[in-house]
Length: 204
Image (cartoon, rainbow, N blue to C red; front, side, top):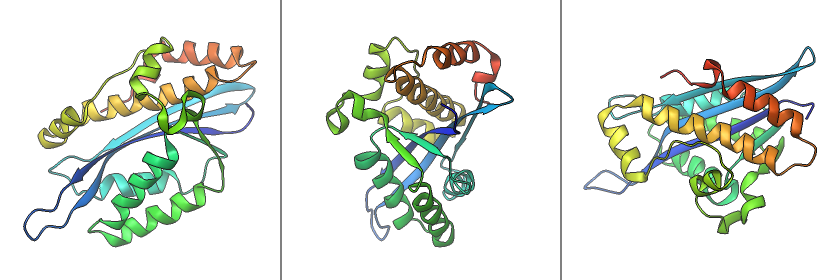
């Protein structure tokens, strides 16, 4: 791997229609793990953002749009075609802040010109078992979060739980992709060494 690679994970909540309030999809969190070679060694940058009930719901959309403004050379996603991309489109289509939504849609569209890899394809694609089950099967540590616990974290303003969960998914998306490649032993070793450092813990 000699090009910059970004592993992206996202979380969203679907709010059904209630009274005069239309149904909408809220993008409540996103995390990125950027992996790049600099001066002959592999470096990592882990970042996450979240939006809870007391925040402007467009904040995470704006954050992700900024991250995608310079498209990565390679983008890693889990269940891209049937979950990640449709949920992002739905969040933009139902957003109250249409300017921010339009910006995110534009940046998302441009990022699709990169090399986009759906890591789930190596595990059954749309028929893949849950991400946590796959990570567990690969012996990777993970931070589980059900839809119920995600909703509770959103309701109570628990940014730390959302960000740590998504950061863990971004890191494991990268590690699962490495595991599916041949000859990636040095990259796996470099990743394992980084994961053991404080830099691998995303700040709330």
